[in-house]
Image (cartoon, rainbow, N blue to C red; front, top):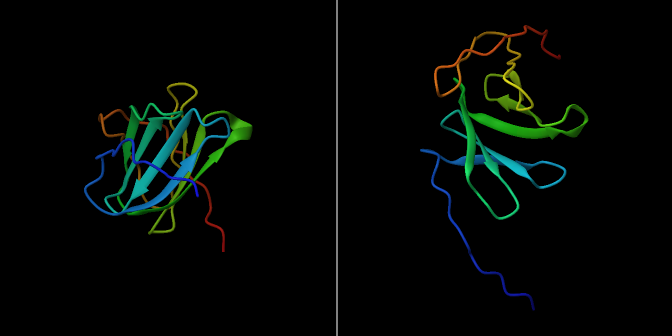
Length: 117
C-alpha cells in the first residue's frame, strides 16, 4: 500500500475551495473558492503564488485551456465565464454583468460575450 505524506498546506482563501485545476505540464495550478478568489500557483512542488484575481461571485469551476497557452477559464455562481490569460499583461474577463479588476487593482480588458442557453 502506498503511503502519502502531507508536504505543504497553502492558506490563501477565506472560504471553502470549490475547484482546483492544473496546466497540462504541471507548471501551474489554480484554485477557486466561495470567496470569489482565483489564485494561481507555481506547480511541480513549488506552491508559490503567481497571481490572484478577485471576482464578485463564488468560483465554481476552473479549466486550463492548453491550446491558448497559459489561459485559465473560470465559471462563477452567477453564470459568468471569465477567461484569464497569463501569457502577457492582457487579462480578459468575459461576463454578462460585471467588469473586474485584479486583486492589485490593475484593470484588465473586458470582452462581452453572449451566455450559452
